[in-house]
Length: 270
Image (tube, rainbow, N blue to C red; front, side, top):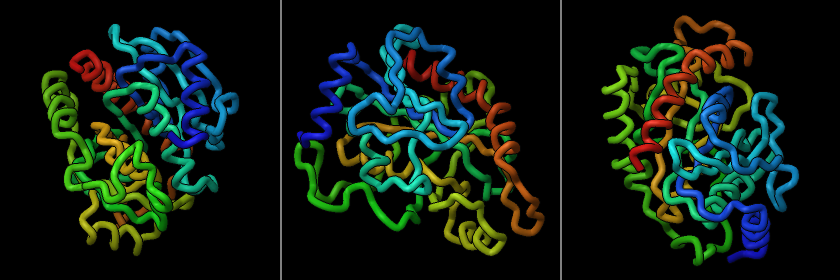
């Protein structure tokens, strides 16, 4: 294990974080699941050796260890983005840490814009595949053979088992869960009309600024993962209106109870 990774894992274990089963990444405006956790330990990112620190206002920047439905979970309340100035290795580092601490599954969430006009604001989209438009990759450089192979397969980046469970739960709970392709862009600015047209032509159903680095890192370690986007705005290039971060957070807040329900239920089933 690389020295930084070993150091961080050792620190968390000394803090009593020893056997989490499920890792969770909470995206923009999606911290509500934290209220469902029977908290054992929470640590601010700035206290964790080698961890980046969230600079996005809506990301609380805490690692939370506890129980949901009697399952041990390790939750990132806030993630790291390329537009914050972090490199891909820094962004994916917490996923590597969570895997080494013991998680067997990874649940990811994000806020995204709906490119597919059949999808509506504040609905959810289960990511079935992605298009990576970031200019870098978390696996660039010397490969850590302890974590995974030099050339990891990405033919099925999102676990069929986890995705199938989420679709079953959504059906049982009467929650609209769209499925589609997520495209990641660098940000932090939102896209132009021409860019939205291009992304739709590429085959994307939703666009955001995160998630893919974490998914690549998870696949490198053969860590089963799934991801849900909360659709916070409708990206219709023919009828585009200005969107502020406050609008995005409001839309995320409307969708948050459904996301919380899905993730609480899937945790019970794992």
